[in-house]
Amino acid sequence: MIMTIDENKQVVRAFCAHFKDARIGDLLDAMSDDATWWILGKPHLFSGAGTKSRAEMERIWGHLFRHMKDGLDMSVIGMVAEGDKVAAEIRSHADLKDGRVYENQYHMLFTLRQGKIIEVKEYADTLLIATMFG
Image (cartoon, rainbow, N blue to C red; front, side, top):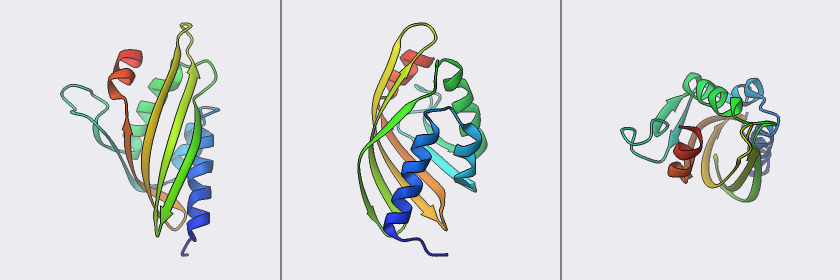
C-alpha cells in the first residue's frame, strides 16, 4: 500500500492529536513494531537523547504524561512532505499537576511506511524538557 503525500500528512496530524488525551496505545498503534525515535542531544547530559525504540518511547511518554493534568496539546503549525517523509513544525502546551505550564517548540521529521510511522527525528529544547521533567 503506497500512501500519498496528503495521506502521510494526515497520519502525522492524527498522531500528534493522540498526545492531547495522553493516548499512549493510539500513539503506539500509529508506529511500526520496529519504529525508532531519535531525540536531539547528548545522552550523557540528557537521558532522553539518542535513538529510542517503540517500547522505550512508551515508557518515556508514560513518565511525561504522569506530570500532566490533561495530556499534551501538540499543535501542528506547518508541514512539508515529499515521498515517505513529513517534516512538521509543532508547538506544545500542557498544564502540569504541580501548577507549572510546559510549552516547547519542535521540528519533527517523520518517515512513514504503509501508513505507519517508522522513524521520528525530534529537534526541541531538550534543556527545557530536562528542567521540567528531570
